[in-house]
Length: 308
Length: 283
Image (cartoon, rainbow over all chains, first blue to last red; front, side):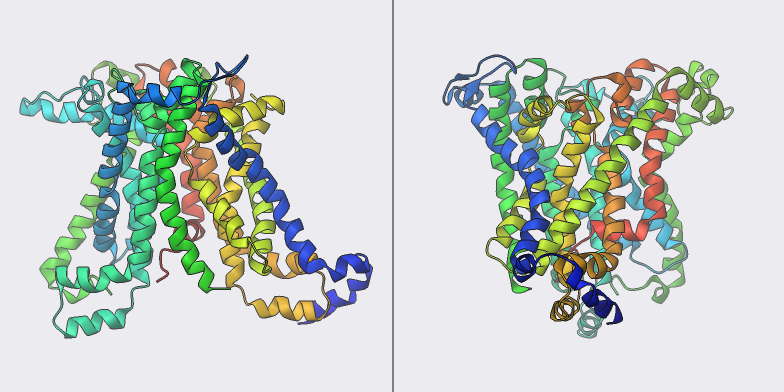
């Protein structure tokens, strides 16, 4: 309280009467404007511009020609687009293993034994490593000539396939690499969630004879709803955003077999100078992701509105 | 506690757990172990085809010296620092202001603004790519540090504002009311009451943002062209081309690139996890 009194003594020195009278209106505007201006300029407005660009043909310089829905029509007949979209579905479905695996690792590590805090951190730290590094390591693992997997299988007489240069396997090889840090992230969410599970409810359920799997599904998981929700949303968005690993591991190849929408968009814009076509791909990806963003926001704001 | 504490289990179960723990850890960290081991592998081992077996000698010092001597990795590291630190400072500054603005005042549309900040953070980068590149060209900051820094500040402000707003909304509002009753100005309230209380949130955001921005690959890829401005993530792709068969050197470079965020994480673990798991323990 003393600090507040000191502050109030200094009030006469600051601002005019008008400003002081209206400061409950002026302050929020002044506080929010800089952030909102930057965010609008670099995020919100570019989204609108990109959607606009998806209706034109443009090489990045020179004039833009209005082509209406032509870019979208072309996409419908573009096999690479469909391949990339299919791969995004693979990413999305297989990435959902991350929350599941993360939950089981969290349950495995949720014990009080010597050194467990360090073990938890070590399990988490793939998430802190750059995806570029993750991509490089997994590419070494997969290398058919001198990779770890090939070397390990060699004595068994098994020939390890060249995963990343195989049209059928490349995408799955990349997804596996992506699952590694994503699982670490989900694990930490669940560890935090498990921390705040009500022990009395668990004990009561145990007294009623619930244990193991049934205890987990009926009593514990409902209490982990918040963690599950965040883990699933962030994982889905991560799957749809996948770019770095594809760029470093295969560049979308061989023959676009491991392409995803995010990379195909980049490819069209940077290497083929097809800004309009690239924007149409980005717009489609954006629309797909909007579903999940909207879902996330609705849950979040429902909780928020209850509070102040 | 769930699962049941291992101490309440039989001796053999406890023993099994204690054996399973380090084994699972080693399997889980195999990729990292591989980087570290390869970074210390000597050229003679590689020439002999000994990629994954026991190394006959350790060559960490030589390999690191060679990477620093024969590539621009020093420059790349410095560039990462030059890009990351101002981006964090800018995002924290803007989001503390905006977070306070959204948490302390009731006005129509505040939820809409908050929703825009959150939603913007989840959009695919590709929907921003072409216009943002054009914008940096128009502002004359394409292919400079500033292009990436400005973008990072703007983009990360979305998540940071969300975070700060939530943190400030949890603070006891009576403090602000009491100050207002005393006639303290809003700016003074922010500087002298709110900012000292949000220090833990700022610490959490700073470490999180450090890893996000340090590890970011896409924006420097789009906004930077000159080799001498590349941050370490882009630098690694250069090294990948340069050390096409010198795996030990590429591994040493990867290790160097991964180290700063890893050290940051281990030093500030509590803050880091508090930031990342925001909302995970709420009902």
